[in-house]
Length: 148
Image (cartoon, rainbow, N blue to C red; front, side):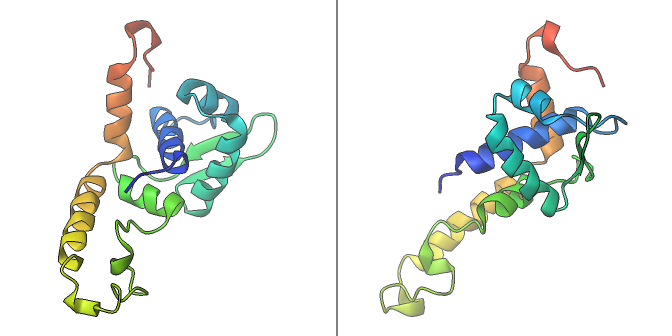
């Protein structure tokens, strides 16, 4: 399974908003795009999806922007990936519409793909946006650190 730029950039946007979680002023798209090196036009589309998924709120106008409405400590990466990319499905034989080439439940690969999906969901489900924000903060040069 490969996460597309949609998932990668969406997570970056949420990391940026996690850095500013609890601030009264929403963060403008241009700030998110610049700090996380995401094309602003593409970011706007992702922010709409993240808003519809209930992760962020958006405020219009010159003082507008975006803010997390979920505590980043409770926002799981698995939720974000599924909202942006759809179900985490490493093989079509798991989605219920495929019958594994006519073999159905007799497919020798089915359990393996189920185990792969469970492992991926385990890692993504146990990783929060807050944890990624901490890793992001630690990776920044000393002069570029956020003050929250």
